[in-house]
Image (cartoon, rainbow, N blue to C red; front, side, top):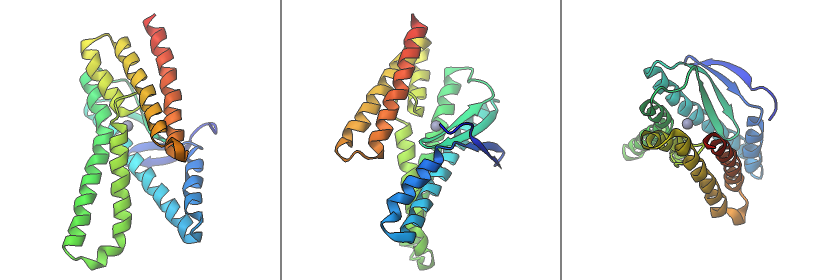
Length: 226
Ligand SMILES: [Zn+2]
């Protein structure tokens, strides 16, 4: 949207670039807290930073899974609605595709579980010196839970869609599998938007964006079948 993504350098051996649309996200979070003054803005930006870290770790999960199958990662790009991992080559089998797709959400869910247990440990153990960190840890747990679950929805372009496509392509032609997953993506987008429509929140925007992206995939998939 704002030209080429900007390089941030290497993190844990991964080349990371950020899309200009991330600035919109930072601005939205900052504005959300603005009514509470500078502290609110700081809270909003902290939340945005936690989202970015969780998205990066999600992509890192994809990259590690690829490397297990000998598929290197060119780069990770972070943008407004998440991120994507660009591999050096495509998965060779549906099994590889399924595992590589599942690794992202699995990373988030594992983090959510770990942080949940850590918070319980702090509270149950009465480690009062760590109490101030609990809201931050709790936010991170929540972000990872949502990110993990949302990405497991079985429609294009979500990871769950890639997993379903990999499974379907064992049984039916790849092009058909692609079309089915694209249609499910459109349905998920509409459902997400409809569920929150009265409030016209970010979820509605996200849902409609999904509808658009998945519709493009429907058109491409139909063309490849004809
Ligand atoms: Zn993913």
